[in-house]
Image 1 (tube, rainbow, N blue to C red):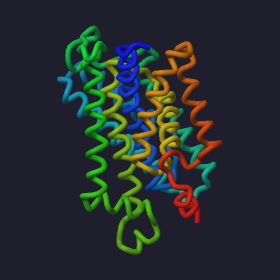
Image 2 (cartoon, one colour; image 1 turned 60 degrees about the vertical axis):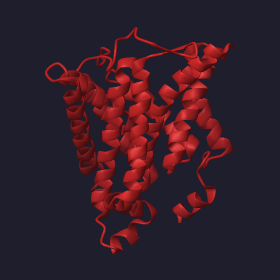
Image 3 (spheres, rainbow, N blue to C red; image 1 turned 90 degrees about the vertical axis):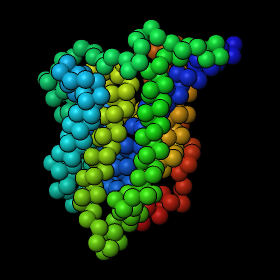
Length: 296
């Protein structure tokens, strides 16, 4: 493999990897605050991108994206209030079934509101054939937008959890919800905000990546599987692990095309998830000891 092709695979892997990482972080935010694995997480990306496409027919691109993110955040809050808030200590199986049901509901609603066709926002810089030369590799300016925006989101989220009062309250709920309640923290509001935050991140990632991947009503399911795989790979509950898992998954997928037909690319994510669950269920950066403590 020539250095130019190696670099090209790396660029493609990092571009998709940061998107998987953002989806995985969305899983992590809700899991840490509620203990719920939200299988509707991929639908937030689809909703954000589809809403932005519709708004862009009437608004400039930045306003369309901002409106789509706000609308998706409202949907995230609505999902929590309607389907999650009223449950009292539900079983894991019940929560999985509810979030899968919500995912199907959102997907079918999207099919009714839009259509089964693929849509996309315009490239933020240049067009579909624009490319920058770097070390012999061709890089789309939109790929740089994807890496830049998703990277800033991850850094901003880390700063939010460490430097803001609301972020520290969410971390307290993640560590021990009962103790957080005794300290005066409204745990229910923290749960709602975790859905709002993960929905907003997903929507923005969906808008940025849609010029490259396109979006349709059922594209959220595949992204949810990839994001969940990245979260498992990095260690469910670890924000840094989710970001790292996304990058590793994106790179492995990209290089798999070199050895396997492209049709097998999606199977790589499933194979990786099964392998991690069998060999190291706590993931790369997850702690088996912490996982056991969380269960008690």
